[in-house]
Image (cartoon, rainbow, N blue to C red; front, top):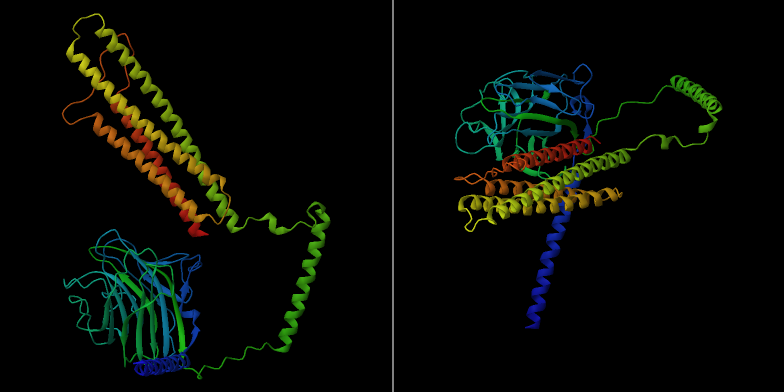
Length: 502
């Protein structure tokens, strides 16, 4: 038995070693076959300075309803029957290439339309019926189709369609009869931008997709692979989008293009050595500017002896300091608003207590001189007293909840540690939860105080001043609560926008 076990273990070890050697060999061969990537800036765009002051994009042209901005290009806005596209001005003259496209497709509807397309064609398809570009193109189109035209419930989908300039795109079937490959991926309304990596290397097209669920930019998954695909040797890169009866915002954040060359066949780098005469000229100009700068520094120090030796970095506010300052300012505003709301609730609570005491005294006065108290008024007053007691109880709960929120905001304000971002967000979540509890309590009060069949009303007491109507009180509390919640949401959006900007 022991000999059998030893033989079994030895056989397993041999199998493991053979598998490991094969994996290592594959890894070495794959690393040796990795193409060389060279970034091509004339065929790319990316924020934060994407467009110029006149609205143009360097080395690119845009047509239709495309709207360039500093950090993205909105190919089509969320309106019906819109078309737009952007195309490179120059043809790409390299055989193998790779595109990395970062985009975001968002819309309010459950179904989007029509979709977005990434192109590599021999001519610029500036305007047309195929996702905002021309039909019968010569080259490649990778379609991110959002709308299900054929009714087979196979959308959203990514479809690869090749064309030699003679085919007409099959809209009715979503291009399924002409597709070289496709995969089902939902790329609408994702928390992070969606990324697509399209590689054409050694006549093989590969499409990888990042689904936008994580911030990891390299979290790609396989979508489509097409072998033996022949594309034009020279072509234009482009991206287009279109909307129909439904509408989505089609935003492109970046379009990066890389030239791929085989290992050991890198193109020779052009001679970049500066001639000796120009080098001496530039060196002389640099020395002149350096002397001028030193002279200006000495003059400034003589004219301003009080700032001599002070570090200039302390004069300016860093990005982290500005972000922390904005967070603390927002917390101070929330703190003040909650304190004001707490004071208002205290005032309302005192009013309700005085009202209950007045009603109780009136009940005692009416029932004391008579042997048999009047049934109807006393029942009404008992009902009002019961309702007011419930109101007092609920207001106390609201006050306790707001006190807890105020305590948490004060704790956040006292924390000056920049690394406590997660705790800060947790406190804001608790604060929102308490505010929701306040709103639910107020709604519950409204439902209890005013029933469907009867309506509580104040008793007619001529000697005493008119009481505060319960309906007006609830409306006042609800309006105050809604305004406070709206202010909280507005401040959170402002802080999120500020953090995103920085």
